[in-house]
Amino acid sequence: MYNSTIKEAQNAGSYTSKFDGSVMFKQEVLLEDGTNGEVSARTENKWKPGDQVTYTKSETQWGTKLKLSKPGQTYGGGGGGSDDSTKGIIASWAVGVAMQVADRDAPNYDQQVMQYARLALEARTSLKREVQP
Image (cartoon, rainbow, N blue to C red):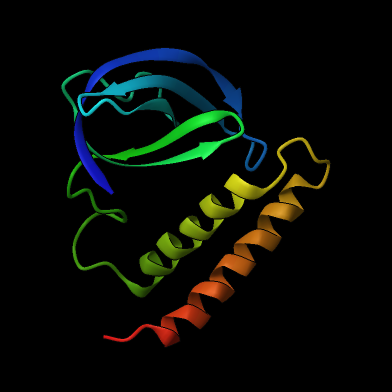
C-alpha cells in the first residue's frame, strides 16, 4: 500500500456491477506521486483533489485500476472488530482478487468469481501456515 494525495479527479461514467447489480461510479484519478488510474465507488464524486489516500494499484487489460481508502480507515464501524467483520474483510479481499482474474465477458462470470475467490482463500490458508514469525 502506498500513500499520496489526490491531485486531480474527474468523473468517468458509471456501470452496473455484474457481480451484485449495483451502480458503480468511475473516476479517473491523478495522485501527487504521479500515479494515475481509474477508481470505482458506490457514490458519485467520492474522491476529490486534496484528499489524502492510501492506495493499491493493479494493471489489468482495461488499464490501471486503483483501490483508494482514507489513511487509517477501518471497516465495520471501528473498534476492535469482531470475528464476523474480520471474516467479511477476508472474503471481500478474496472476491476482489477473483474479480481481477475472472473473464468479465464470460456468461459464467459469477461462477468464475466464486471459484477464484475460493482458490484465493485456500492459498491464503495454506501459505499462512508456512509463514515464519
